[in-house]
Image (tube, rainbow, N blue to C red; front, side):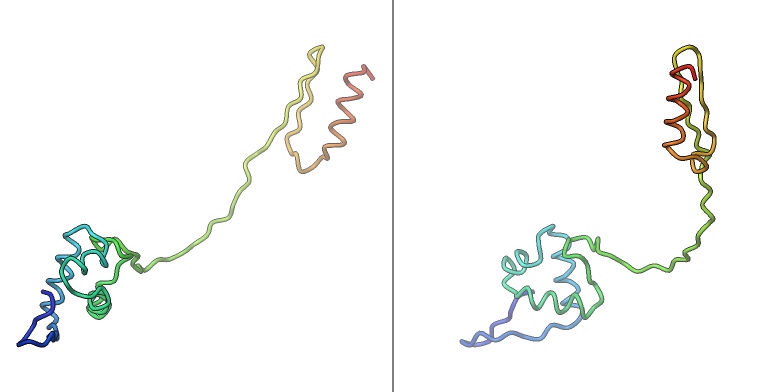
Length: 121
């Protein structure tokens, strides 16, 4: 799969798509990073990357083609209903203050009521 040498000159031969697919399949099966696989096979990482991109076999660089893919999607939204929030304050002497709608009263008001109730007023 590497470069082909003819005569005494180091010359590479252009890959056909089928050769490139075999090289890319070998890379994915190896479990190695692309650059390391290319070095071991005697080909340039740039050449493998170029063929991967040309053949549409792009991935995140991890063997196995585990890269990102685009898929059709429909995004919808539903009205958000806030859950009923209740606050219960239990005071000594079995006095209980319940606030069912915390947005309707301020924390200061609750503090003032609790203060009055705890002083017996």
